[in-house]
Amino acid sequence: MARITASVYTSHVPAIGAAMDLGKTTEPYWQKVFGGYEFSRQWMKENTPDVVFLVFNDHATAFSLDMIPTFAIGTAAEYAVADEGWGPRPVPKVEGHPELAAHIAQSVIQQDFDLTLVNRMDVDHGLTVPLSLMCGQTEKWPVKVIPFAVNVVQYPVPSGMRCFRLGQAIRKAVESYDDDLNVQIWGTGGMSHQLQGPRAGLINKEWDNKFLDRLLADPEDLAAMPHINYVREAGSEGIELVMWLIARGAMADVAGGPKPTLKHRFYHVPASNTAVGHMILENG
Amino acid sequence: MPLDKPYKDVPGTTIFDADQSRKGYWLNQFCMSLMKAENREKFKADERAYLDQWAMSEEQKQAVLSRDMNAMIALGGNIYFLAKIGATDGKSFQQMAGSMTGMSEDEYRNMMIGGGRPASWTPPKEQK
Image (cartoon, rainbow over all chains, first blue to last red; front, side, top):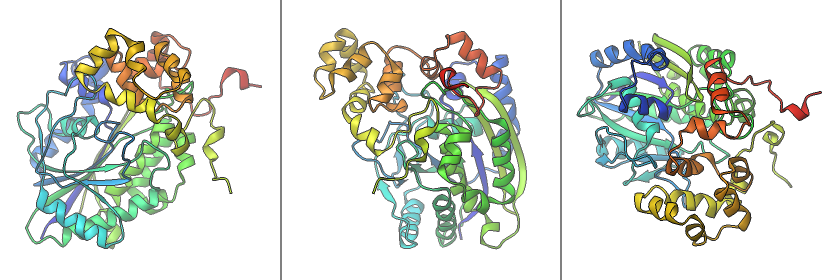
């Protein structure tokens, strides 16, 4: 039986990828960011799963305004690294797990979540920066990846509760897969940031840290928070944090199992325009 | 019945919703075209001629030509699409975001290093 062993939460700031690609990681500005991921890379080496179910958002890369799927699951064998306008990041292509992805799609749709299935999708920094942060620079990613793209670009985005419930459905789907696979689920994006208008540059450390506390201790209550609170307190792009609730909803305690173990927590301001938050939870 | 849009009163912020998206469709699709290297070259060679191939309003074209990010946002642009213009110009996300705040690049960068803009911020003219 496949099982979800852990969840990882992290920001996916594009400048973090650029800092790695341009060899700037030892500069003091960036060292403060990457220092928070040293533990995570070691943990990832010791706990490499077979598959990462990676919840992220596309940033006007694979999806233009021609089609705006709310939830899109990648069912392809592989995904090319996108040229977002600066040229593609020099990182390996991403290998999928089409069999597990198809199984999850079928199971989750039958649990009343209407997913879009995507067989061709170039993946942008939303997906590759978390991989780089957790796996470092490498010739080949050590894991297969099921990309799961959430619309958080065009309002209205799905509610926190919808995301949380979807996570629960994904957990059931994974656990009904016969092969013995170790699966991690990652929720990415955030934390507080605003990239537009005279209010650009917004950061809210206190709110972010409370979000991390509640994500661990009482995610269902956190999931009930309305969108407007994210916009007011965490900035217009802080709404990406609803994606973390998908990963959290897939943890064992939400289905009546034991509480997860907090392996690592990190918070730093800034990376470019954004507050960097990161957490690793293991299922007990 | 009008939809509830509680985000309309957040200062200095335009939420990219379905209405904004409808207004900005061609502006954003033009931006999307800049993901191809050959289109970036064509745009740089003659910006006006390139823009005239798109069903954008004159106002939108002027906003692009003058790189007025706030105007582009008001006219339906979304930051992740507009970022393709920035990439074409060789600008980072931080430079683009900062350009909307009225601050210099250094001032904006230093504000971020100092912990960013507080959520309680209001634009100067609205301060009482």
